[in-house]
Picture 1 (cartoon, rainbow, N blue to C red):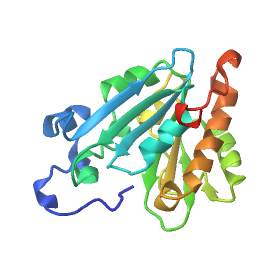
Picture 2: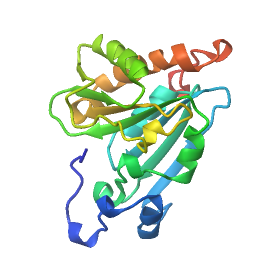
Picture 3: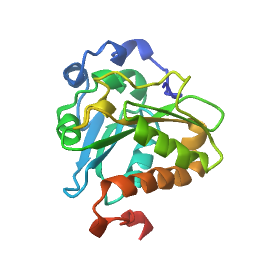
Picture 4: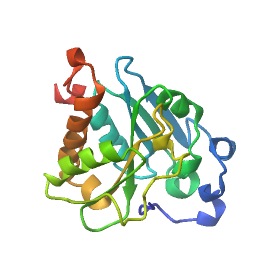
Length: 217
């Protein structure tokens, strides 16, 4: 899932692939300088939208997560804020992503959707996670955009029980990997709307359903 992060002086930067969990990351990096965390709770919602590698780690994922969540769904962002080397220093792999505020949020939610970025020149979307029903519903809606959408046969099945997308109340969730060609183009708007539309059908009470993001009001 590496993006084109600046590789200058890589040897001087802690390697996040060695972190055993958030405690190791927090010991090596400084919140408010190297990274920041945002949590937005929607008490009526059973859905959590996550960007655990947002900001400079996997660019465009924070923006997509915000667009999907709008004012309807719970939102969690872990964002890289370093001037360079965000991926190397801050990419805590998903099955070790145990940041306490994130776990507290998803524990209260029946549906969890994690937005990620992956490499790829072609506009492709790779879906995984243990919630196969929701995964397939999202995939079907995304295919109406005439993008390449894969639910199997790709490197990111996200089936590990400790994958952060699977740590909600149901023990099942959805992971969505989007190539740079999706995140950095006009496709991103349509993709966010498609995902959001599926989730509105399952995760928001009728009286609050369909509230658009503030940016679209």
